[in-house]
Image (tube, rainbow, N blue to C red; front, side, top):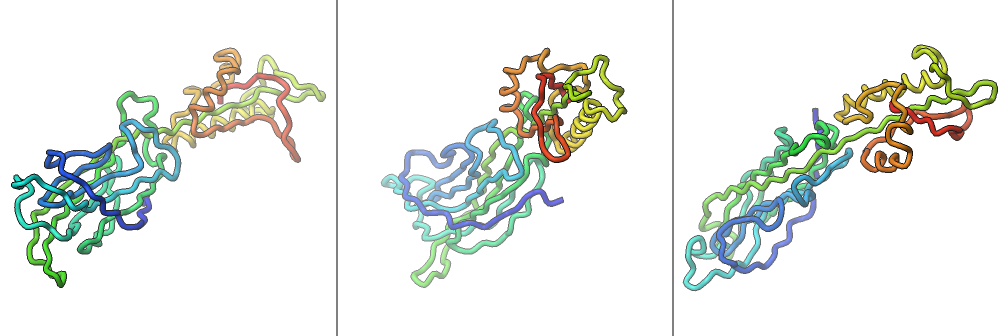
Length: 280
């Protein structure tokens, strides 16, 4: 099943840089580079700025970029890897991307002087929630190969450099959390009451119906790779008595989906007349 979209975006800008003493390394999270003669060959994954950054939703986006920065000013005399006639252009020869071990089908379309840049979009819910698992991260790996070229004044290639492979990796955390709540309030003789003992689970009473609704939602959110709160279902778990309503804001902030089976009429919504909200 296709779980991503790949979009071509504008060309990578060419930046000036100066030699700082290293032949290869990383400039910021998700970037790898190597010096080759007078150029700096670079591959990067943008959109994830740090390890463990939370990603959530159906529009998680990353940008992959492969290209060259020039000119690099080597020392005099130039040591390896700066020896040789300067490159005047480059070409990308291969790109591959995996997200959580699954291969993304990137177009293999390359041309001289053409930086490779694609926006990749995917849904976090394709992958299991990692918010409750210490150390669990989603690996996104880019493998890129490219090389420097030397051309004559007419653009003909007169020397081709060795293929360099760069493998930047980022590791965000998948965050899919659903909060389910159900009411236990009934309307009897125009009074808003909570029955004790509660109505039978299979009855048409509103509290029983709402409990069945949240139980059904629990199953479906589980299929969509969400961790569901509460972790168990049951009308005996009173939100007010367990955590207190002031903490509801915190639960909502921690959730990416909120499902509330509360109150309604055939023509409008109505307010709850009690603070009895039960876990779904």
